[in-house]
Length: 308
Image 1 (cartoon, rainbow, N blue to C red):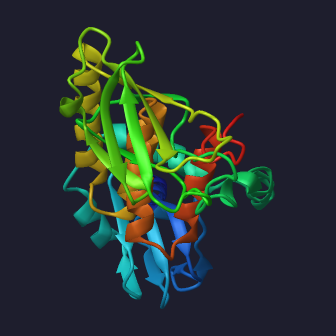
Image 2: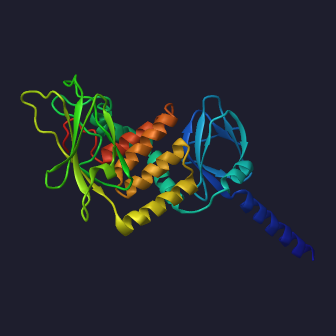
Image 3: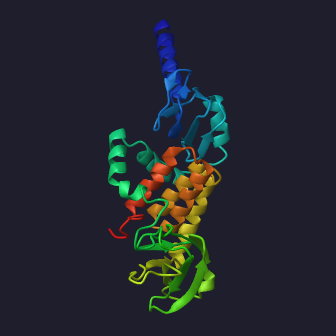
């Protein structure tokens, strides 16, 4: 009998220990000297278990992903019992956003050597974020991409030689003009319905040039945009809605998860939009900018020469 009771106590204690070690969250972003259980340092990629307490230091920031895919940010200094954080995260459940959050974790948890090497390799990318080239306007777009939304935000880097504004030209696949816009800014929002695209191949080419061109300036490079329709568009709309519901749609971290969803589905225009929203929401969290720069490099955007 005593042996049975001892065995039972051992089994119960093991079960309690395993339960206490249940992983609830993973750290996607960590800024500052934040700790768990009043002493253990937190890093990007750290696992957070049931029963632990997260301490956020002054000026710190933590982006968490719950096991069901829900994202969460900690910004106010203080102690956060993980069990209470779990209660907030249980409002939504699902695995779709977690799939893309895991991709974000993989990107954010690269070794320091890998990150350093990436940034050296992409120096020509990161160095040109605020300006264009000597001879051509650089659009913040790949050579071709799909588009899911009903609007498109076009962005380009300011041309050093252009002092009088820009002309944005949109043509169909037969080089016939659809719309022409003029602007003093380096961004333009286009409503797709205004282009009157004809089925079945709703694609168009967009280019940007200065209002006053140099005498020897080359023709602007056009970017091909394919507007998705039919079942593929319907399925992607449903998936995007689910990711928004699971990950949340208001935090910088959720914006990066949404950007990752868009990149994985070749929706580069929308991915750019979400990355820039993330940086606007948390301009002091450098990791978001690094992730954006690496995204641009992966998609051959911001190359100073305008070519691969």
